[in-house]
Length: 133
Image (tube, rainbow, N blue to C red; front, side, top):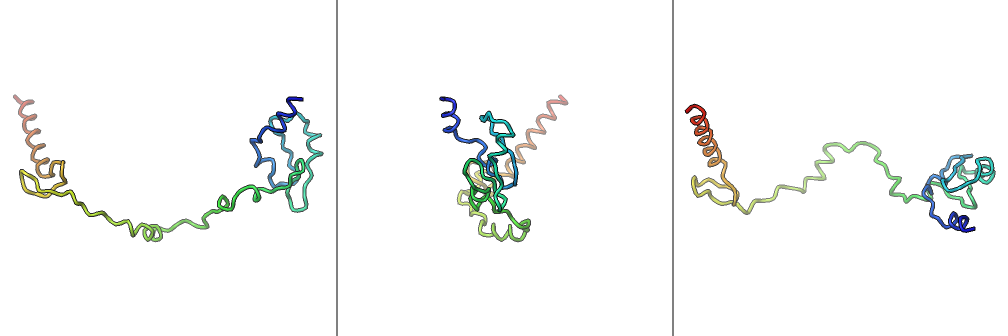
């Protein structure tokens, strides 16, 4: 008796599959112990293609909200994508300062490009001298 109560109160994991709108569909749920022949007699197709299982008459459209059925009709074009992102302009930088060494503008708390290039040339020249000498 306890197992029958458990079966009736247990939530169905395949609730969508049990109400698919295909006529004469036999669905055996994992916790049922009925044979396919006895289960087949309890399912009767309805006139509009829905299946009546245990007194429930619902189709897949009744179960899912309309937003889940929304599908794009065609591919979004590049021009429509760019029109949507046209308001996303570049933000103006407010953290620009002059470099202490060369005076060129740079982002604060970073090394400027010209000083970085000069530093790399110097390091590579020293490494080349170390390899030769």
